[in-house]
Amino acid sequence: MPPLPAKNRAEDPEMNVEPLPASAVDILTQALRRRILSGDFRPGEFLRDVKMCEEHSTSRHTFRTAAQVLVTQGLLRQIPNRGFVVPEFGPDDIVDITRVRGAIEGEAIRLIVLTGVIPSQALEAVDIMHRSTLSADRSLLVAADRDFHRAIIAASGSARLKRTYSDLEGEIELLLAQRQDFYATAEEMAEEHERLINSLRSRHYDTARDAFQEHWEDLQIKLLDQR
Image (cartoon, helix red, strand yellow):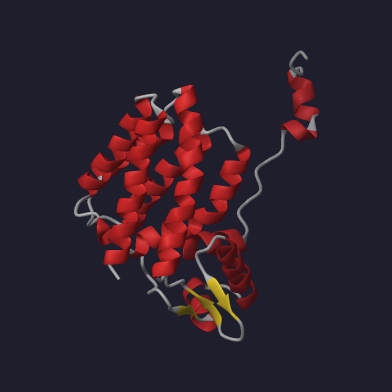
């Protein structure tokens, strides 16, 4: 189909749709998400309606709606008659989250090895790790780790894997934010993820699977040791 003439493009409402401005709920959701992942709230701490509304100059309805969004992302839990609380992960949670993550990512690895395509977003995430320090905002490194593994899942090309992983991603991100000390340095974090990239470049499934398996198991052990 030939492109629309300039006049017709200007008259076509679908060609001139402006992006909707972020709503008050969207803005508050992102603000609370940043605070949670930056460690502003302790595990097990309740986000009180009155305090949150005062600190963010918002209404109780907006706060509750934003908090419900974060519940769906695994970053908050709602306790009946008590409110919204930052999850506190126990040993069973840590084992279950890392086990399920490994199962999902393992299938993605199989598909990536077949195509041989290394996602650029994963390489960019490793570069951020190299340029960061553990003294920096912890959410930066957690985001880099998130982006690395998100890119691995996306590179699989499976919409169902992506959808399944997105349901777990918030809990993974929060768990890493709360337990970030399992890496001695940011460089150690970068080098470990570089090894994963190199395992994918081998185009050998067993090599890649073993590298990622070691990564998942090592992460689980370190997270459990910190309790």
